[in-house]
Image (cartoon, rainbow, N blue to C red; front, side, top):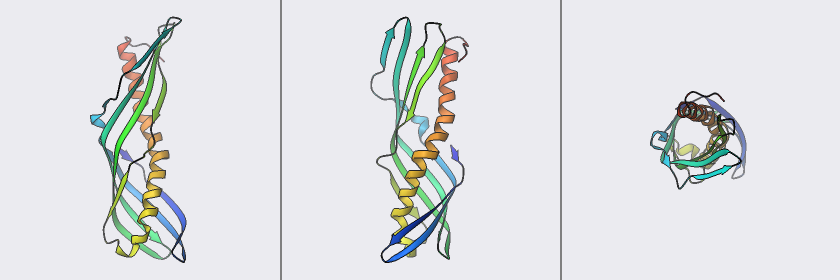
Length: 171
């Protein structure tokens, strides 16, 4: 899955210097979700004629790669590569069939990143003190923008699958 360009400007104190850092992530590609599988047991309830199921899907091999341009004050480094080993990503969703027989995806959540390892490749030695700043900003970006994009892609797929299972019902 390809993500759009993301630019963030951060003011950070590094040592005794205050630096204005502009991070431009472009050509970001997320991989690994094709191997998602169910995690744990489904939680199923049946109440007042309606049916609800809560499931979790997870993938332990999720990665992100991005080209990156780093600008610190007047210094520009245009040719860096960011590689993030996201590790495990869990998607929790709930499905329901109401008393009217219509299917619904009534809950959808992608967990925030917790154990991500960010690697930056290229001639970075001059910018070495900034790697933690870049890693923190990438995780902030992913926990907001990228999770929203994934939700916009995956949730409709689940809704379509529910329709197919129910013989084409509408939401």
